[in-house]
Length: 367
Image (tube, rainbow, N blue to C red; front, side, top):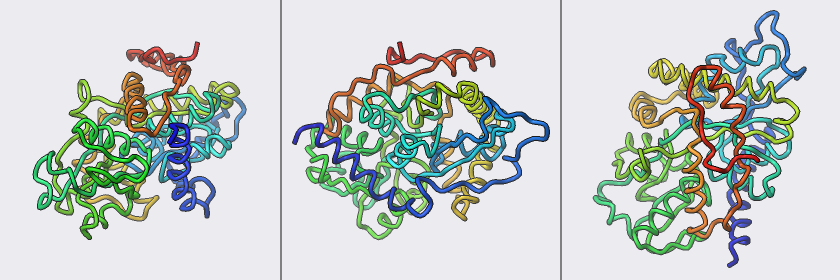
């Protein structure tokens, strides 16, 4: 099948379930407002804008957004421009929301960002900053899988067809010399596309033998008796790879640059606070997750999950290029032109003002 057809099918299948899940509340469920997000008395609107709509996932790998919302960092920097958060289950639905104007700025994984950029011929989004690295594990049933070679012939879950972890697992399997059809998931190892919310139940039921998943799902599986067989970070130079980026609608960036700068400033300050106060930050993220899902993560899940994630302002642009190459090799993406996917000028201005080192776009910035 031509690569373009594969990509279209990947995007369509990946988008279908999350969009159905979120249909009752538009593209994303609105996060619960609280005292930390209230506008300070006497504050002024930025760029004359009433609200800025910010999207993110209820995942710990989106911890910058979770902590920034819970502790009020975003609202503080935005003054009287009200933050309107929206929580998503998957990247394709967030990209749809960005394209439609339902959100302005979002925290998202690299594969949806790449797909969204290429599908729109580079016209709808820009990556304007980094957020997190790491936090992805291969967790297995130790009774069925005792070594990496034992993964062959087993059923391994990934969150979604063509998503960041799906691409990573398919690439890793190919490096083992195993053949897997990217669409059906059938081959020397069977790839089962399973929403992170149901993967722990599937694992307990024995319908899957393991999963290549982000946190906190990986630690939930370990808490259920799974064994961490591989940390994806060990496959990357310096154990760093992008797991979460910040994206913006290009039109919004052009029309409201000061709002974008304020959001980036809040993100930088949030990451600085997270890294200086890891325990308090972990609890803040969990507090917001509890508000949004009705259930906090237990310590045996929260603690190891949080420890495995690095929060960084650097988008780790060179690793995005590598992840795109992996998607091409897996047959899920036609070789993309990523020139212009980054605009890091606003972030670098913020970093310089904060006395922090600037970051690089690996030659993929706007010209």
